[in-house]
Image 1 (spheres, rainbow, N blue to C red):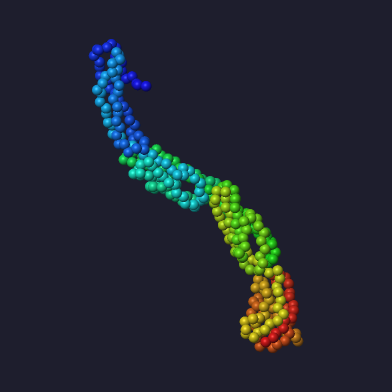
Image 2: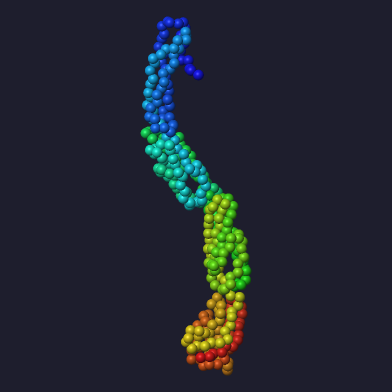
Length: 315
């Protein structure tokens, strides 16, 4: 619909001057390489219906403002997790910039935010594009930063005993979302994906048990602990052959290495004490002792037990 900017009464009479004004916003935003705008002439019709012809067109110079977009336009990350957001403009020559989390940069948004609190934190990153002195509107890209969970676990019974099931319990703290996955490595080539598994260690020893918890937003924390598994009992020897062949050369009590608070006494068949040692470490080779049958007394304080028996010495 044409706009009426002035009126005259009568036909074929003198007319006063009228000025036509076209207002173009400074730095209009559009995706085109056109640097000027052709403004067509107005249509002038007098009161008698006659059209005035011959009015010139005008060409107006333009400086377009670039647009800006972000992919993704929002996201959630874990504390300490690096991320990148792709910034684009329809003008390839536009300069892209951003700021947020007390830093700024050019090109794509890239940051590694941290959250040491106990709830999710939203950081707004501001992005813009500029070209020939014109700038786009500011684009906000919200990034939610979830705090990491704190992995923790307990286990029973104490002490852990070989061939007796050990029950593990997840005691983790989850600050954002929920726990969605668990992973256990028991240090003996066995593993589990249960939250609260039970595991039996076949042999005494020290096992490094590692536990990992993952939240619904993909945040992860791990915890490793050394677990001491003791023998159910000390196994007693019945023969020793100290001939230097590397086999059965020492008086060895199986699993005694897990019970350092011990005392060993060895007697000959006449009841004479021929060897004694506190904190025995399976290292006696019966040097200068003749063949025969010998009697031992082994006291183990940790087990509150005293073992007695005979062994045969054969060279």
